Image 1: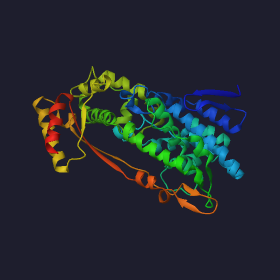
Image 2: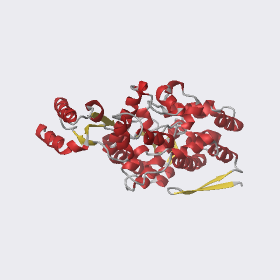
Image 3: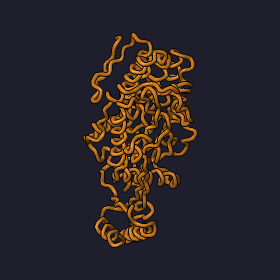
Image 4: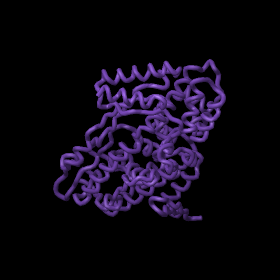
Amino acid sequence: MSKRIFHDPIHKEIIIDSEKEEELMIMQLIDTAAFQRLRRIKQLGSASLLFHGAESSRFTHSLGVFYVARKIYKRLVDKRPEFSKHKFVLYGAALLHDLGHGPLSHTSEAIFSHNHEYWSQNLVKNYPPISMILKNFGTELPAQISELFGSQNLFSEPLKTLISSEIDCDRLDYLLRDSYNTGTKYGLVDLERIISALTFSPDGNIAIKPKGVIAIEHFLFLRNIMYRTIYNHRINEITTWILEKIIYLIKNNDAKKIWMDECLHQLIFKSENLDFKSFLKNDDIVFHYHLMKWQEDSFEPLKTLCKMFINRNLLKASDISFLTKLKRLEILAFARNKCKIKNYDSEIFCGIKERIFQGFKSDNSFKIWDGIYQYSLENNSELIKTLSKSIECSLIIYPSEFRTEIEEQIKLLK
């Protein structure tokens, strides 16, 4: 079969034609066990406890990023035919950029101290089923692709801009996809307008024509709203808190010998020396199965935390950002005293969670080019300057039965 069609809710038909050598590579990568594992990693982690439609996977997102990269590639090759030499690197990096995600996607970063970019690099360079496919299409492909996932500053290069920048193929897909799956209308990016306005600047990097600036402003505005209303929603912060405490209790009660299979044990206790086999066995299904087991067969308060997560009987959180730091500590002391009276472990079931939403941070990878002059985005848009500001938030987390008393106490401290 020379063609394969993926029916995508965002991009409609994603057609992969194996008669094109670069798309044959994509088809072979999709068929690896490592990439198929992404079907078992939720794109939005535990956000489905808030937005019940948020059940899509890293698999669907990764296909979407490839699709966006291919559309952009076709636009850029029309502008500069020599860009065609980057086709295999761009396609491979777009498809494989999230290969290293752990259970519940970004939640793994918090609860397991997992670095998905490192693991994406590691799998591309050193995991034979992936690296050998890439080498069949170019001996340097594993190294070239993995380099794009790193944090080193390569922003003068168009490939780095497309794969890892503030305005890249990844973000262009996930804002559309996450908005659709959560049932919100915030992330409706004008993808076609942005792509049609892409060009090259004199320094060889990718730029945007003036006609596309409003679409970029809209994109960055939507990103800001999506983070504030979905990605950093307080329910996500509460579920992450619960999962962090679950892993904390397991790490600090090893003597109690709760049941755990070897692959998750490696992830929790030996994450720095995790082998490929153990890493690839860890997914959302395995992790949820353990939570199901622990809610019945472990120790308190681990049992209670697992039941909270599984049954969505969560802790509560109130915004205390407007309070001084001293008053935040006062409300924390008040909440912890309530916990002690009701026999809750106050260190586990109560605390302050700080979060910061980083606004648009210019990396100088994306500029405006009108054919004569080159400008930075942030210096030519008051809206983008505003969106560059970071937003701090502070939440007090506590058991739901204290909600009325704690919120009344917060009002008294205003």
